Image (cartoon, rainbow, N blue to C red; front, side, top):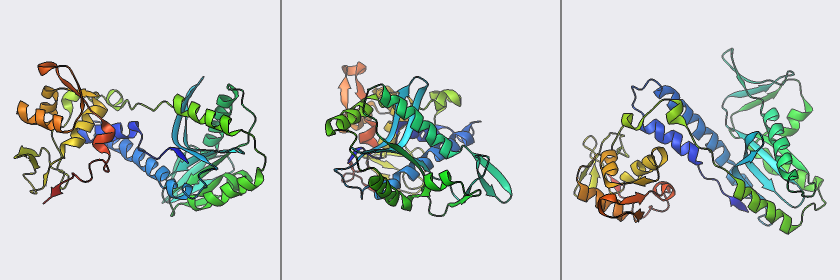
Length: 336
């Protein structure tokens, strides 16, 4: 049962919004773009696990995607966590192309045309997650339960090389196709029930309650201010900005594309980078539409919650609604 399903975390959306709104001539543009791409690549690797995990019996496993839990050292993050009555499983997911070597000194590296790129050893990483998660559980005085951990490489074309044939590497590191057989092995290994169903649901609710999503501080880190943002609606076909609002539609002057809802991604960018509430003046500037009446209609047709009256009215932007393709699927009208 997926109690915390696979969704793009807010900090990744914030990184992508910053990349979109940072002008190409900004001194940090390349770094901002690389960070956004790397975060999305990592999420895509985690998302690819959803298919395999969906084959697990719903009544036996509780599945979390992306947990970020506070502890005395700060926060620790788990990509995927499986809970059952007999054992828990931490899954660290890596989405790295080409090859990955593990040597006798505990190093993990990629060899690309005789150039060595060193990575944090994922086995050490997942071992530390295991230690911190164990400490977290201890404070609730719960029964002892086996906690297993694995490292999963999500790309089919990643070549994994265990140079010294280290037994621990062989047991922990694998491709995603090996995950289900490994979970079956754990299920056969641990036959004794350690938790009651009430205890399992109790820790499930506690984890959901204590999860603290990461906030992306890219604007501060890369010294980008809202005044520097690229304003306007990007064309969903050719990427030209700004589209023009004419006759109840967005129109691209370059490729001729029209759309009725291309403004939603712009409002989502505002919410992710500036704040959850927007007024008419701010919306006019961000959308690059100068008619107060037109912008008022645009904002009201989205049925946002509102606070204030007249010139003091603000609209609460719902990022999930704005970016969820299923919510607006039937009303999407983009064509050339």
